[in-house]
Image 1 (cartoon, protein in one colour):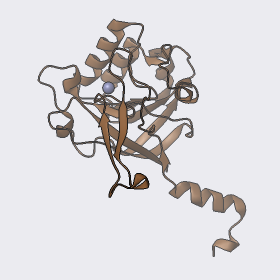
Image 2: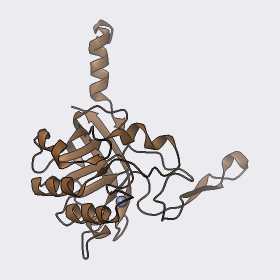
Image 3: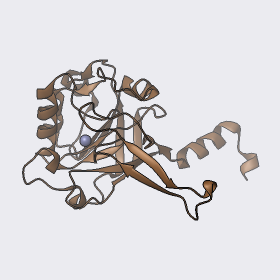
Length: 227
Ligand SMILES: [Zn+2]
């Protein structure tokens, strides 16, 4: 049957069933928040070098690479990452493309008819820009405080962004305000996504953070499938 499909319909069929990895690779000396320690990944045993097994040792903060923030990250007594409902970041989600090169702003969001309970992933110019280097990029597109309040009022379930923090590195109050606004309303945050291979639209999302006991965050693998 497959041979009888035209090229375009075959391509469509392949695309519809294909999962897209939107996580960034975890690796030694990868980008990290400037005031945090570096990410260390070291192979301590290696079958290629005559050892019986291959094993690695890893040292990193809990907010490295693609990860989810738990409310506890900013909220006293907030939920921890191991308490996250399993279906929080599994299911229908929407990728929204943001044109603004400075931040996600309330004005731009207003046209997207955002609904209560949505999982929204913001694709900004970050995706094509920030992961080309292991250096920290300090002028990434962040979420403005107004936009965070707008999303909180809408009552979205999850928001994701394509760099390692939703708040601006240059505006300390914005880091605090965006996280507190969303996390205090029970909105879970995915940071460190790479949406360069993804177009705006509706997708099935699977993102599960590791089960760090009483954790403030969890490293995660995130994947999307067109629907
Ligand atoms: Zn984080």
